[in-house]
Amino acid sequence: HLQNATIEHLIDSSPKGWNRETVSALFDQQTAEAICKTPLVQQVNTDKLVRKTEKKGNYSVPAKVKNLVLRICRGCFPTRAYLRDKGVQCPPNCVVCDDNYEDTIHILFMCPLSIQLNAQESAHMAAIMWSLWKHRNLELCQNTTETCAQIVERALRLIEDCVQTNNSKLPPQDYATTEAG
Image (cartoon, rainbow, N blue to C red; front, side):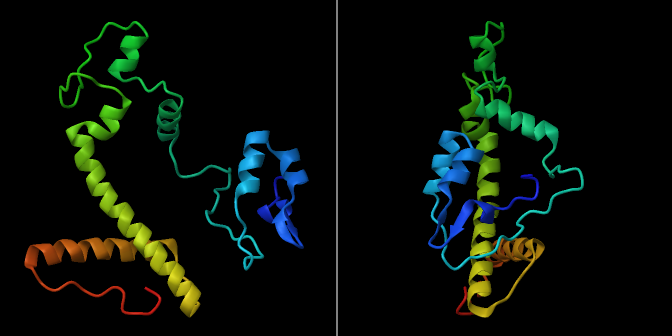
């Protein structure tokens, strides 16, 4: 019976707040407490589908990526440091950069290659966050709706223009010309 349930089924409308009894019945104690601590926006009254599901209920993250993230979260990411802790005879150094110690933090954040990749991705993520905020303000102030593709396209144009500006030393294009930006 929960297959078609939405968040609104967990909320009391008057006064607007979480229906603690329903939330506690559906979720474990820790999750229920976290849900009930989440503030509700008074102006929002209907649910909105944020991510479209596929017919089989699957999402666009491949199984190998899910597996990798689960291993990282569970502390069993098979880095050389982890393997050595489990008794596997292997050198401790990083396979990528030959640093003297390959653990999860090193391979994902400290290895020179990951630093370079993360810097590039950070710029993309920051531009997407800015574009998402711009979208929010356009919707709030001008009742303008956009697709995810339009939001991402604006972010990519922003980065592209920034790179071109840095390369040509031309004045940057103004992306915040409206009061919504």
